Length: 126
Image (tube, rainbow, N blue to C red; front, top):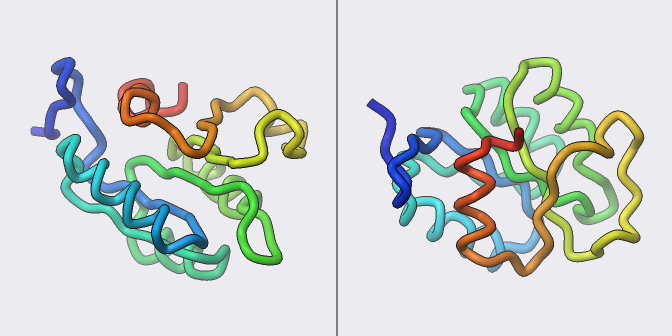
């Protein structure tokens, strides 16, 4: 049985956090574990994220849009192909350029509140 969020809905067991800032990645990890997520894996680059997905597909992912010298769109493409829900996370607000195929997907603004993060888990990026 999947762990439950405070509102009683189930939360994903395995979440991949793609974030190049270690402090932000640790913050996300701590909050996700606090919500009842069983496993949180972090990746600081596209290569690390794709390797993590190849080793074990996550149930859900948080993708920082702007990584060091790259974007997470290749990871998003892989997740879409595998039908794995995800949410983009960005500190750049509305001015960040999201490719058209991802423009309708939900985003979290950094820094995001715990309520917003919990809502993202509850809706699974829907």
